[in-house]
Image (cartoon, helix red, strand yellow):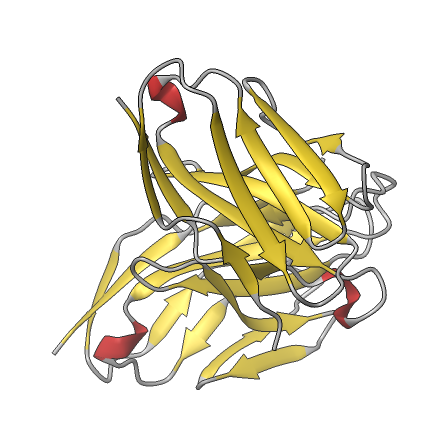
Length: 114
Length: 116
């Protein structure tokens, strides 16, 4: 089974802090994604990566950056956390070759910025 | 661009009732369609999928048929259980839209509550 893990289930940070959210997948997937989930808005794509060191902006990249130095790991960085970044963050991965791009999700990190 | 519209929730049903959650889509290419489920406090799990017109996806008693003529992929279950209480997301993946980004397009989710 594909396993996608996220470094924390719950995180509380202060405004202005730099925040790192880590995601690791164990299925050698090429693609990795970061979403945020908010009530009434569903899932919105922040960034994705289709290869090591490659990244593409999603629908809402402002205030975020990402890093993918190894194939299995995709990090989301909040350079200076703000209260409007309080949300559930979901990581996902998919393969370009197996199961045709079906995305597999981690358990999520609920981030609160105070 | 691609979009997914699913019925507004929340939906509250009694145990053993019939469930339908409507989902319609617009896409420029030939999408694959998915239903994901999110149980309380967890990430999304793939529930079922269909990759071409008239395909029926099924899993755990849930079914959905890919209807190209009505651009729909409605989720159904004949007899819901309390354990089915969750948020359900309809999604599409359009590999031929030219975006080259392998992105899923999600609906906003429908919360289902099943009461004993």
